Image (cartoon, rainbow, N blue to C red):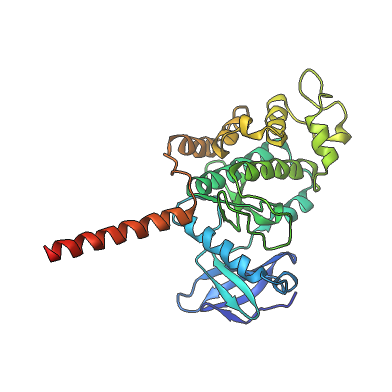
Amino acid sequence: MRDLSGLVVEDCVLVARVGPARTVQRYRAADRLLGRSMGARILSDAPARRPGAIDRFLVRARFGAVVFPRWRTLHALPIFRTGRAHETAYTITPPVEDDDLVTFVERRGPLPWPLTRRLLVHACSALHVAHGAGVAHGDLRPEHCLVRERIDDDLGHARHDLLVADFGTPLGEQAILVEPGPPKLASVHDDLRALGRLALFMLLGEPPTDDHVRSVLSEESGPDGYRKDAAAGPDLPPHALAALRRLLTDDLAAAFPDARAVALALAVAEPREADLERLLAHMVTAVPAHIRPVEDRERAFAVVLVLVVIYLFVRVLL
């Protein structure tokens, strides 16, 4: 991966690379016009050379920008601008100094259930907003999640928040993947299934295998819900194991209708966290947008505009 530090994209100077090399490389950036810190996400050289990869990256960025920051959420990375430069593609975002979830787990090892639950609820919040606006993630993986550490003002304790980056694909259409992969339709439940894999990654400290999934889905847990064989999977309290099994089951649609239902199932037990409860209250009381592809809304607007023009033309003639 080339180091693009010092180059300029969209009036922003790329100051320095942040984090290890990924499919999308993160940079610290500085806005030359406004004098403020920014972030940039640059498609790495290898994927950028694949036919159509830059176009797919830009299309994903367009749909992600439609949802965020138009819909306000603290748990998705907004996209301010996007385009082509230096034989690759980029997005301009808020500052991105935080670790991605891969690096965070590599440094800390397997995460305890309370922290895993917290980060999963944050991911549910971002997915809930996106799905309500007709956009799926379509490629939810640990490298597309950022973990931000902050100090709680009330207690002085460190808190961790999760930001989901790199939305999106219109719901019901073929998922737009920057990297080659099997074709699939972007759907609410495909994102939720990826959320189950994300949970296993955090709890195990390594990418989950099919054996890990089968172990969690098996009936070899004790009457209190804990795993008998800790080597086969994570130790979880009963409600957590039940929720994780429902996320990983083939009949996911019957278990969880949407991301909000997942968040509620994850947050039913102790320990209680005030900020999580506020987030859940907002998710429950907010009226969700009608789920339909973004393109349908644009087409409906165009039809209404044409009808208004025809009406005004007829009024003038009469």
